[in-house]
View (tube, rainbow, N blue to C red):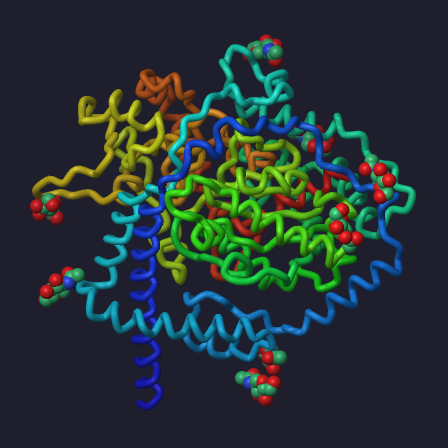
Length: 577
Ligand SMILES: *[C@@H]1O[C@H](CO)[C@@H](O)[C@H](O)[C@H]1NC(C)=O
Ligand SMILES: *[C@@H]1O[C@H](CO)[C@@H](O)[C@H](O)[C@H]1NC(C)=O
Ligand SMILES: *[C@@H]1O[C@H](CO)[C@@H](O)[C@H](O)[C@H]1NC(C)=O
Ligand SMILES: *[C@@H]1O[C@H](CO)[C@@H](O)[C@H](O)[C@H]1NC(C)=O
Ligand SMILES: *[C@@H]1O[C@H](CO)[C@@H](O)[C@H](O)[C@H]1NC(C)=O
Ligand SMILES: *[C@@H]1O[C@H](CO)[C@@H](O)[C@H](O)[C@H]1NC(C)=O
Ligand SMILES: *[C@@H]1O[C@H](CO)[C@@H](O)[C@H](O)[C@H]1NC(C)=O
Ligand SMILES: *[C@@H]1O[C@H](CO)[C@@H](O)[C@H](O)[C@H]1NC(C)=O
């Protein structure tokens, strides 16, 4: 009985925390939408796009002596006393947060105390301000989220930003748009043009990377697998071998430097959650993280582009200068304290950043580093073979990342095409003008989901019962809809010229998604109708099979989104050598 009662208490507590989450989430989006007016000036014009040269290579002559390396290590071990990496987020249970309060890092303790206090404060607030069942509230949050997606920047860009290297590979017939197959050519070109450095004194790490590269290039033939459906991948043999080598070899060093909240504070909710989930899961990984930087193949710069914006952007300033400066100061500190940055010019360092401004924030001082970006735009200087396309995922309830996963079978998907969302950028108004207002009953294209007497479908229900989910670009090329479509098992239709889709280097997106050029919006319906029922069913089946690569789990699982992001970074690193 006593046991039962305490179980009940725990249950109530968990339930209460779910409310807190939602409450926080609500706060989050409103503050987001109010600071959304980002400058036209930042992106557009000032900087020319970096040429497609490969990353800066290891400069052997500038390597420091073994003595220097040892000195660096000792320094590191001094700061490395926090054996229990504390969990920062208030999404964790009270108990979890409490037990991590023992960190030796005073900062951590304070941070955790604050989180607990905040959570408790809001708990009281939330209780009095929210009515209705848990499910109702979650549904509301989803709709609010959908209607407040004002997070993309205001900007009009022209495709003339493409670098000459990209243009050369591009097929002129596509009028300035890089197709998926051209992206693959650019990727391969980045490897063949790079003259591999003859290393006089290759380190153990270099040798491991060279070994991995040789192994991948000579991978045993695999056409299908129990978990891996062959047609989804460009070359399953290559992917499988590379993935296995990552699992067995890859070591990442995570810098401990950097103050919260910009560093070391993963944000697990909202549409930028992928950078936070990645940060949290990597830092917690016993498999991939090493404390010995001399054993690491990669160095992670653990900052959050969302927190950078939230804590430093001056609303109305229309400038990210201070954000860039902040990151530069961090790099100056890192590169004077350790020799690792200088050794490679940062090319074995990486960052994972989902905010729309991240390309602009990092292009100046982190141009050599591997940048995993949600805003993966060829015309904003995405470098093939170096940069990584990071999936943008919406997380409403961090405790339940798989909530409402799945959708109806093909036979019950009666809506041809669906889109609902804010009129960001130039493209969506065009889409709405052409297909909105219920002028064609097959095309459900809305800015807001209409309310009617009797049957109100939610955003989620539309996604679950449509054949095709339209994913037009907003202010930027990326949109969380692409992954949402896969989540609800709807075939994505991507209308976003020069968007580099996540994991494009291993996954063949054209096998399960439809790419429509922006200029072809007037033909959208014809294009969809021209796809045979058989082809549609095949694509939808593949959507279900590729889905696992886009799912977050509380504890990472093989081939999930965490491992796929890490794999993309690893893959580029291996082919640098
Ligand atoms: C390599 O490093 C040395 C010593 O720091 C420097 O003199 C040389 O210019 C560098 N080479 C390149 C290609 O950066
Ligand atoms: C770290 O955590 C383990 C178990 O989670 C615990 O036994 C140990 O005492 C902790 N160490 C410190 C320094 O808090
Ligand atoms: C916290 O640390 C102190 C001293 O370092 C230790 O005595 C205590 O047992 C620790 N508490 C927990 C919960 O690990
Ligand atoms: C909750 O219910 C009370 C009384 O039933 C009502 O006055 C209040 O407006 C409701 N709050 C919300 C957020 O619906
Ligand atoms: C463009 O594509 C056509 C056919 O799709 C091909 O024959 C031609 O060689 C391509 N041009 C370039 C420059 O790649
Ligand atoms: C996949 O890559 C391997 C190794 O480069 C190569 O031998 C094989 O022919 C490729 N398979 C396909 C189907 O392209
Ligand atoms: C790395 O280079 C910067 C700038 O050239 C310099 O200030 C710094 O001292 C160097 N770091 C180390 C560890 O030598
Ligand atoms: C649908 O929305 C309209 C307008 O908000 C409302 O009047 C109606 O009751 C709703 N219907 C259902 C079944 O929820």
